[in-house]
Length: 384
Image (cartoon, rainbow, N blue to C red; front, top):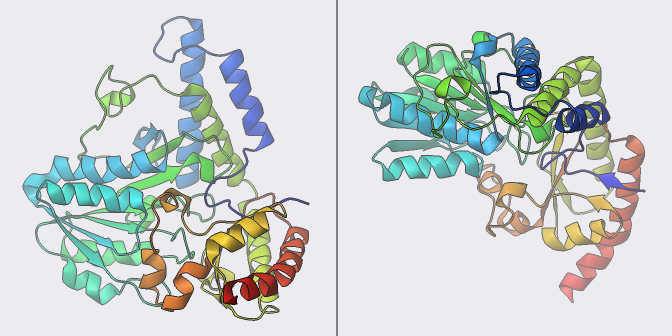
């Protein structure tokens, strides 16, 4: 049996999406900027995808900007809006548990003279709304908060965050990194007060190298890429028509019978957490039920290094993560795990399980059986 539990790193593309991508690459392969029939066909795919995505968010089609994925969307949201709005102020607020694709652009902006306030989180991974309120200033131009934490699944109250920020400074923009939230939650940017929203395709069973940024109509933002003026000059470059078509279809499918899909994910998540309780020396860092994201479970295993356990499970065709895939090439202890107060001796012993539409309870049973076999051996080995 194979059990792939690393869906927060990337997902398997849906069969319907794969078929559409292949069709666009091999049959309807025109450049969307071309004036002939092939170009018109390509442009139609982009318009359809934009409509499909806008419908899932209940926003206008013109507010969707296609990108190469989550990192580009986050960079565009942060750097693009900071540079466009710096006359109004140079203060930005974020959190201590953001993804590197938020943290590193903010570090870059610091080098340009912007001031960044990083808010700490509590043991559940949530910021203090009082600390947030106190941090907002007249020169605060942007607040960027992760909708769902990619390591432990903590869900931030974005609507409440936006309300607090806008009460104190109505001109402050709200950016939500929704890369782990889109497809899992019904998100309504207009209702929740979100001005910018980042999404990555390969987290929702669409192809890698696809994503989008929702930009509320009227938000001032500067392009990061200049050239032929595609997408109203906001992101030049030939559109990735096959990828965009696949992204639109994946979005539509994920939000079809959405409640049922998410209920199944929560059942699998809760089942894993219950069965982890059968193992000695394990600490679950994620909450059951709807208290945290439906697809993420973080578990610390006493006396076993995460990397060793990851490879031992891999030998049994069980695939997990020792943290965010985007930071796994940069060794170091997770700021998120430190932030929520994981004990120091468990920081290097934490595994992330993350689920998608293809996971089953049988795969969980297979994984628990493997852990029951592996943990005593690996712990003896470490003690030795």
